[in-house]
Image (tube, rainbow over all chains, first blue to last red; front, side, top):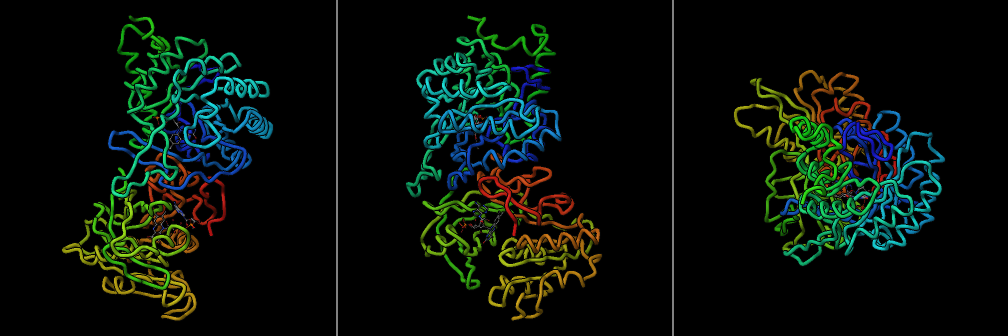
Length: 306
Length: 266
Ligand SMILES: Cc1cc2nc3c(=O)[nH]c(=O)nc-3n(C[C@H](O)[C@H](O)[C@H](O)COP(=O)(O)OP(=O)(O)OC[C@H]3O[C@@H](n4cnc5c(N)ncnc54)[C@H](O)[C@@H]3O)c2cc1C
Ligand SMILES: Cc1cc2nc3c(=O)[nH]c(=O)nc-3n(C[C@H](O)[C@H](O)[C@H](O)COP(=O)(O)O)c2cc1C
């Protein structure tokens, strides 16, 4: 058992937001595939269809570029999906939410908590970092003041832990993390996707329906590791890693940089059972290594070297 | 993969609402029944079955399909794929197999190449029977492809050709024990009625249904096309599913639209 902000996880692997997270049934399936916790698709105030396709493609680098455009059925219609997860698994559920203003975040969080039984929602993850939905996400996520205001506003009205998910698309991620911490965030999640674009050379058209989007998968891992390393050094609250994890070695590396838990998204492409594969690999690494007795022993260990 | 550039080399008007577009490139498909993502640049990208090695057969229903209908020979589109699962042929351990194909409307698109492959298969000796349904005579798709592959039963909703009624009327009269496999693709209401009949006759284990749901990433990551109750991804775990895997599923009950909201499926 791993304890992250009071949530009890069977193992440190966590489903990342926006992957297989739109329906209760798919979240339950990922729990059966071994995830220690589940983050839902980011949910907003009203129904949103998202951008036109193509919304995601795999690139030759082994990475992926996506601009889904935050499609979601609205918090009102999403309630039944998360209730189903609670009824069918013990795996903690973190509801990812997004909004254009602090009051939108507050409305979604309070209404969801008010309309569900206690225990259905184990935590919220504030998506202040989506790189490609105009007026939402990373526009807010680049401004330490805005991140602080939203964090404080949500913390004020909820009685569950609040995780704040940051964008790497800034010069320095630390002041933003610090502002979240100072305003009551229980944990930081880093990173969301890295701004990027791909163009079809046969026609000159940008490939994504939204023209540009966010890079994920193996190529972003070094960016994530550096962000996590810096945040761990500067903050006291737990850091949850995300970005490019596709095997247990990646997860161990991310934990050594300072991550208490590791979110996995794009790697579901190759293997939907990635969660159990990675968590078994971490366990074996700890067992076979005389220096460590428990998973917690490796968190942030890179900071004690050099 | 990035979309590959595919130039249109021929366009065939199949019915007043359905056209086949042939391309100068082939998507190397391992299994009949897989689909391609068809990118009409500047408009949208939509899933389409491969109706030949190098062609898609499209019914005009909305924005992207209308934009496709505006294209001419030498225009090009982007293609990704082939993706998803395909149909499985009857097990090879018998000298002679019999299969039944049930196709409704544009659902004939992935099934016509299947009928041709099985009937043309040297040595395996598969006898193909097809029930092909359409609204009206002029909308019958790939009648001759099925006819050349074996026995063909036709139904039209309005009785303008052959039998007046639905494919299910013919299905109810057939002795299903003789078939080693049954393949189904068509409108959801048709597939749902067929599912119920085949379930009541305890045949689901030897059936394959090709489903459709709203696809976004089309590579099994985003989760937009997941169906209840198992959370199966239609784009990656499907689109072709064994009937037994669809028991207690949402098939015929509801679907989710592009926002993920539950809506009626017909
Ligand atoms: C695996 C699969 C294979 C298919 N094969 C064929 C085929 O061979 N021939 C054929 O004519 N049609 C096929 N379809 C259906 C085809 O994808 C839709 O008719 C097409 O997307 C309509 O696009 P539109 O912009 O013209 O219509 P719109 O006006 O955008 O929408 C009309 C309806 O089309 C469907 N649709 C729209 N976009 C998508 C999408 N991205 N994914 C899934 N459905 C969508 C929705 O149900 C929608 O309500 C297939 C669908 C799937 C899932
Ligand atoms: C298809 C797709 C959809 C995503 N949707 C969201 C989302 O709704 N909210 C969010 O905070 N992050 C979203 N992300 C970002 C991921 O949660 C994750 O931070 C990022 O992809 C890096 O991890 P990975 O390399 O393991 O995919 C999405 C990523 C992908 C690939």
